[in-house]
Image: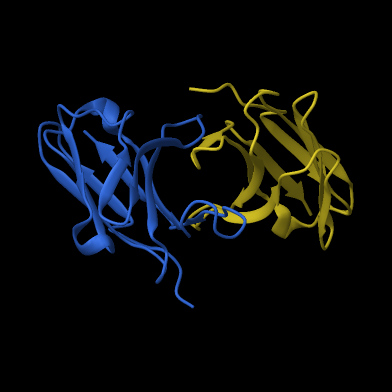
Length: 116
Length: 111
């Protein structure tokens, strides 16, 4: 079974440029998460989707970040414009719906973003 | 944002040594405690999901215990091997299904 797929794996951009990350979750997983891990910190949730609905985006900086999950499968996270402080690893994860199974979240390998 | 703390931040051990790390978390609103292993350039890999006070789980040479009343979990590695080198993350889960991660313990096993 394929795991969570993310692309690109690495991205280097100059500040003020836009950038987008893509995630394909595990087939059948209705819940999708985007996390950001800053250097020396643990991953922090940016947004959580149940199917195509964003049910928790309280930690998403909405002035420059946006996300979508069309058709409740793949998801895209966008930053426009990027700032130096956005340099981080962006992780996507997926899981079965809440209350189903043991709540295990499966992670992709992440996208390491460097903003110059 | 909930406070989840892990110690130590980093650890170097000799091959064959046994070691353990600590994760402390809030003792209220507990739903589950997750342990992940994250090797460089790979996806974080789930090790354990623990839900009951007193839980003990084991996978090969790795085991974990859980105390929800006092808010801590221990991860043990017996007979460390170089392939155990990774960052070990714990994550506290509330009923809302969101995970709150610690900063991780970076383990280096020296051959």
